[in-house]
Length: 376
Ligand SMILES: Cc1ncc(COP(=O)(O)O)c(C=O)c1O
Image (cartoon, rainbow, N blue to C red; front, side, top):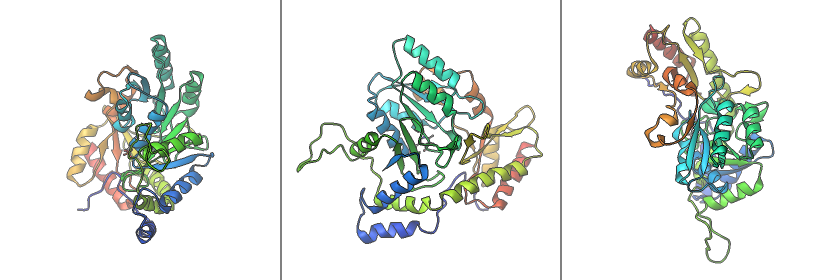
């Protein structure tokens, strides 16, 4: 039986053209025309006068954003708890302290109410947070209006982790373009991929220039290399950027298909009582539907998400529980947390369904049929 994956790479027809160009021109290096082209494509796509620098990963982009904001040992950085560990790990790379925040029920992203509570409490303790990392989880934009307003009122810079949300929008504005800096990921499971890769996005030219500098080992110009700062090897390869150039040409089609897949699941599962979908709260929110996520009402349904994952795995279908919140992770056990149980509840009941744009309608029907049996 063919295995159905959660979200596997879906290549178009022109990635190899650009990769071959890198070989033909011998720019087998972290510089070259594919990188320039990929950055321009992203800038045009995101609009809003952003500039983009391509990097080796989304994690590298978050790390550099923290470095550029001057986050250092002992500083506090606020981050959404309900996310993948890569949103938080770079805070620890800087020996800073994560302050974790619960989600709200509508988008499942950072709760403005708990964010405000946390900022006021940390300020009272004399520890004004140095940055806020927002996340657009599963492609769903966070409540930008409320969150950015709070950040501005308290003069705290925002990093938008849009690793999962390329192509999503809030109020007509592209995710990744909010806050002082935005972050994208082109890891193999994302809506488009370079196999691995990431980008830092900003309307501030200085941040983008500095990110390029730090990502290239902080080499100061001159006949010999002079280093006054610690640098990193975070540049994207020109070969991988070639994959990205081809992928950008099919991005809109990939988003359309992911959204269609969610609609198909809605139709196929409409007759099961006790399933609800992670959904856009109102017309301001446009999700790329990177993953279709459902909530199982375990009073009405017989199986838990973990049981479903196991049962469907035996049928060669890959489902996953949602992210286990960061405040529950042993490695972040000491981090202060502000919340009221929302992301714990989503974790206990949430299930990610196979959502890759390369899945056929028959694949989705096979998943839905297996799910129905498993739930009964
Ligand atoms: C929410 C989130 N943030 C950050 C990352 C890190 O991106 P990368 O894998 O490119 O380092 C990922 C994905 O891996 C992610 O899902």
